[in-house]
Length: 427
Ligand code: BGC
Image (tube, rainbow, N blue to C red):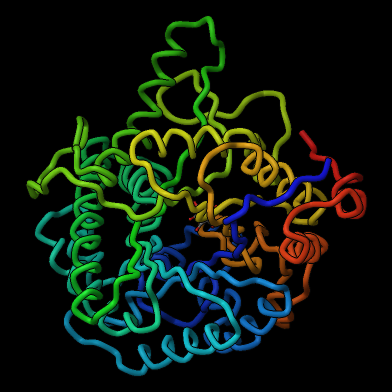
């Protein structure tokens, strides 16, 4: 039952600005809320009020022994209208970054996590290659502003989820439904990632730093045919996987754009990641082009299958494209009552530690419950509970477990008995 963390493995927590900050910010998800698309009608304007509670949140993180924090900055706050930069916002983020470092917590900074400023959205965002320079200007501004405090960056979070849910009928803004646009957005985002990768290195090396690390956070799943003897299911599995995650990973990591993606800006082949960023949640069971869930097997509160071994196979697949240290940039589950999250953490970490892959980081998604996009406040992923009415933070049982894993460098028999033994998934 017991296991030790891998020798160089550090545990951290993750978040995204639009999911925690709150405030009336002019980005596409605030707009999406106003258009009435959030299932429980909750607003990102409330969320965790982290814009005000940031110090309390960092102190709480520190008290839980966390030394690594993946956080994001909000483009729409930094550049509220095109070409106008908000210095006060930069000051705010600098204060936060400086404070967390003083608490011994090192940042991994996400530059784009699903949200666009509305001026960028109105120019049709990442559907147009003409908009690439606008994104790069923002990246340049951000790295010049934070480069002395941050050495590790994620350019873009989950380009495939952003593209597929926003442009292939998944309910994210802008709510399009077009295969062509979906591939176009992935191609533009892969180009943005590659250009940002090179730019961040250039800027920080001009600043005199040699420790820069850049990647993107790739959302990958296991894809399995519903009926392994049905040739149609098998073909759809291969195709769905390639369209959703395979082509994109290759393009972002190596500059090789294979159909349906296109190398619209003629970026050269190369190696565009200093670590492999993997967001892993679940397995898709396929009987048609798209997504699906197995009939049996354990599920979380959103009906996603819980399939711990998949985290290893997805990491292995990325590693076969490019040999780099692996950061699990997100892994976690929707467990509203916190009755099986400790088991989920235990099983995923155990699978990772039994692999012989160079996994050096694991960032749990997420630190606090937060605004879960279309699900709003109704889906809880945190190891810290948020009472949205009072904004009170309370460490959950799974949060105490996580803290003890960090302190002990693994899961002992006693920890297993205390936190995992009695937890069960439901199906
Ligand atoms: C996203 C997060 C999200 C999580 C759980 C990931 O796809 O990066 O923002 O909250 O999944 O749905």
